[in-house]
Length: 511
Image (cartoon, rainbow, N blue to C red; front, side, top):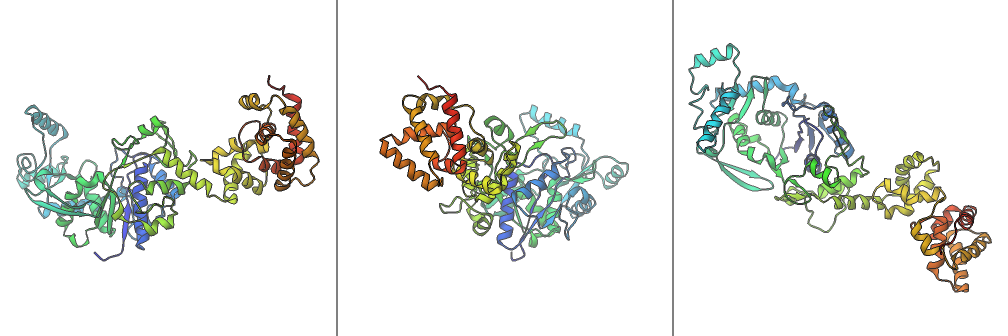
């Protein structure tokens, strides 16, 4: 098939977008960009019973945050509008009737109560009811009823559905770009509903095939939960006579729980303390909330990098990829057939790596709002410098305040463990002497201060750790922070002396 690459992401607005759905969108996007193709966003909202207000806006915001750009579709427009299936409802009946006229589908008038009774009857005999070639001509369908009765039922407003007439005992041969060649016998399949008169809407199967054809989709990249539907979809393309333009299919592996057993769910995230949605979500109907990667402090580029490697292997040791690098290297051939186990700690690792690679200017822009929340007003240069000193120890931007607050606020209390360890014996006297050394330094730069203090320590024969950790207690108040000369050069001489004096004057040495 040699035609322009056009892929689509087609979520249903039934709630927040799961990260498995984001990964599907990402793989579609990478494939489209790599082949110079188009990325289409279609909203499949034909299931009116499960529609959730706000879900569509959530999908759009999530994709934008992730950097997944839409070329055509909802929120963008394009030559195949509208892109919401609920706005295309008048299109589908024509195609459903076309299948009936061609003998590929039929009307069925069974009520839900009648079908439930049939299922129970089969169960009582230890059998499973399937609506297929074995029963369709014995039930209330256009295959068993006279044509005039079918017409009369429709005209008087009886409810009906149109079902696909699955061929009997036929082998359907299919090819999947990830799973290879697949064959299924149609006798194992049932007659799926394609259209329902009750709400004048198609089911997923009909709308999906019709829209993919009309929107000229070249490749359908979707989750493996749709693999059982592939034989029906192949046959629908045949029934419409669209085999020549049938898209290539690729079914992606599931995202699995951290334990490996079963599909990753919100319950897993709640239990283990990690998000399974890209953004924070609050249900407009129940008020239930769910964590989001954005609000939990993840960088979108780290989130995307993590997702890309859940099911795809570049074939190298490389783990960190920019979006352009992903576009260049991604291939469906290296997507796994088996499920990908989600690892919360690995997600944090990715975020830490992106934190460590941020420039001081980037860090300043991210850290300034947090500083302002704590009443700290400093220049971007200072904010970026402080964040840059401590970024290697942080996983999230939100970690920085705890790691760096001592740069801006002098300690009023002191970590008990450090006090017991260092504020005893000769240490208070040594700190008092060190204060005089620092007070005499004119050039308080990092390098010069380090040179002077180290020479003094060697001259006196003190232990380096003994002196530095006592100084750290005075300046930081705890056993954390960067090298002490990073701290002294940032604080400046007057502030260092003030903090040393505060410790000397307020804290009684440990026994």
